[in-house]
Picture 1 (cartoon, rainbow, N blue to C red):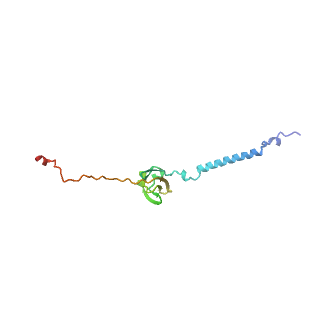
Picture 2: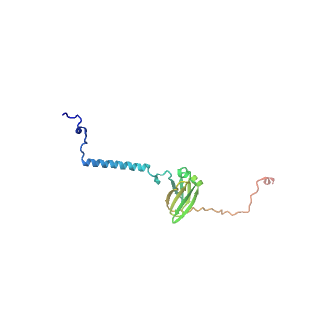
Picture 3: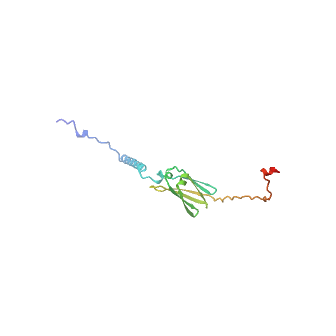
Amino acid sequence: MKASPLRPEVLTWRAPAKSLVTSVRALWLWTAAFLAAAALAAIMWGPRTPWQDDSRLAIRPSDLAGTVRLVWDPEQPPLSDARVATLQVQDGVEVYYFPVDATTLGRGSLDYVRRSDDVLLTLTVFREGQPAVAASVRSIGAVEPPVKTVVAESKVKKSRYRPRPQGRRARRR
């Protein structure tokens, strides 16, 4: 009897035997790569967090002679379409609320005269159909007393002497 040229033991291929340590290490590497890819996808396509939102409000404070000035760019996205805002001021232990209109928002600055050493200013912008956007700044410093203006009074007494007219009458003499 002739041997068949197609023997089953010749056609089957067996992978070389791997050690158990090598296969576990490969499994951990593939798992770590999958988790890294999943985390990257979640960050890029996941829900937006407030610090990633394009509607951030940037304000800059400056303090001069007891007046805190807030300055902002009126062209930034939260302010370009805003109609109204609120300025909340925590001046020491007192809390004040001031409405801010569209004209002031378009001007790009606002002044507040402080009454205490610690002032927290929060500007909240309200836009139609969108959530409110807020930004806060804190100014800590000594309150400078207001500058007093002193008007010097003249010590010269008024006299009854009147100078002669310089017009036509003076020439007739």
